[in-house]
Length: 342
Image (cartoon, rainbow, N blue to C red; front, side, top):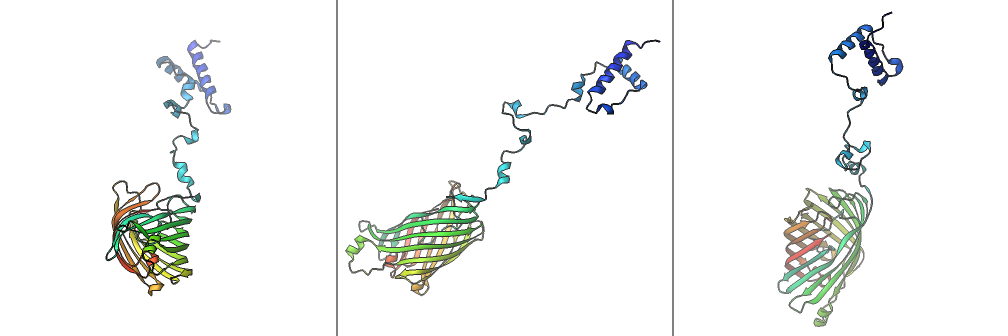
């Protein structure tokens, strides 16, 4: 019997090697027909040497973070944005000492706790330095952590001392009103509600009492419950109204009504700031539901981290004295004031 030549043997060996190295099960391998072998022999005689079988079957390498000198990451994290997990998790929950207020203080409210200082002229009276030292902060929130447009339920605490000093009279303290309260607020970026308790008391200044020993004392005191609602008509314009009822009062009647509007930047302004305008009406039962009107206009700056608001502008007020120790007196105020709201 005539043995096959070397070329035939070489082709047969290569065919068996390719078949053995394939990923298919051994039982699925196919046997080359004689004509297929002859075709392969002709191609081997004419073509350059074939690459190794491992090069034919191995997939192209995929770049990884280690190619760029960075630590390798699990295969499941490759190509996933780093912030995607934060977007999926959300932050709705319990937040202790949150930034921002769900129900913000009224910008033109004459008895809102804040930090402020201004030069106020009262015709036929004197030039006063009206100042408020205090603020309002959140104790806890069940909701999100956004300081600009928070939503959920929040408990706040507020406290302030509201002073009046007579500048021409050696900056004597004429009077001081003190307020402390616990507002419970809830809502979202469009609509907010408030139910709160506050205590307020008024005190005549010692220097004024010494200079005016016959001045009647109106030591007003109130322990009141308040229900309020505010609504954002646009992202900068808010309208509000509230009703208060004092279950204990001295030198005042139980009921009071407050309403108004605020137009101010709601988001961060940067150094440029933005204009603001505010109006407030404060009606009280002891004046047969008459009261005072307060108007403010000026420029404002909103923080991007805390949502605190700094304002600088002019104020006009007409109505009963904003110092409750002088409650029966009517006054008209013109002032230049700086306000800082929390």
